[in-house]
Each structure stands twice: as C-alpha cells, then as structure tokens.
Image 1 (tube, rainbow, N blue to C red):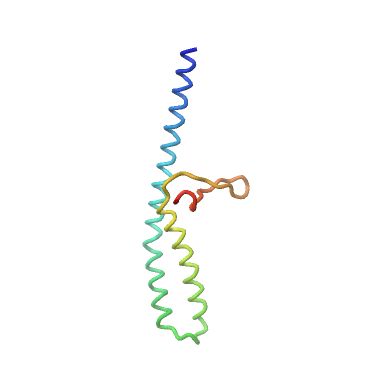
Image 2 (image 1 turned 90 degrees about the vertical axis):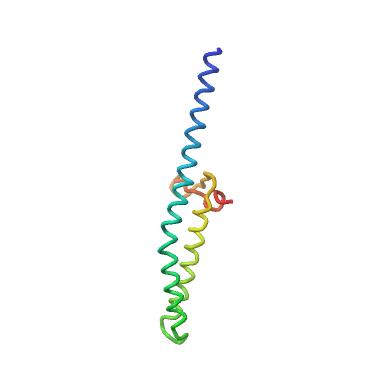
Length: 107
C-alpha cells in the first residue's frame, strides 16, 4: 500500500509540474504576442490619428477613419489584456474548443 501511495503522489506531483509549465508557457506566449502586436499597432493608430486631424469632417472618408480608429482601440484593449495574462484560465468556445479567457486570466 505504501508503494501505491508513493506512486500516486509521484503521479500527482508530475501532473502539477506539467500544469505549471503549461501555465508559464501560456503566460509568456501571451506577453510576447502582446508586445509584438502592440508595436505596429501603435504606429498604425498614430498615423490614423494624424490623418483624422488633417482631414476635414466633410470628407467622405472621415467617418471611415473614425470607425477604423474605434476598431483599432478595441484591438488595443485586447492586446493590453494579453499582456496582463497572469494565469491559465480558459472558456468554452464553439465546437468544443477552449480559448484563453483574457478577462479572467488577466484579473
């Protein structure tokens, strides 16, 4: 019985080690992806802001530029959450797929 209990403890310790390694890999990947996405995103957002400032509001494309800025702000919020991931937490998505829950993982 002692050997069985020892093997069960070893198995549990190994499982915990694997889970910790997975958690760390997810956190590092999210942070790296956020950093790599954020750099070009900031450039695009700055250029779009310059375009909007130089554009007359009567220009046919003015509303498009405003909408693009809104979408880029949304992307920037997602990237920010990616950079703040501190734990592995998933949520169920369509088709039985699990995805990283950015809101829960970054709290």
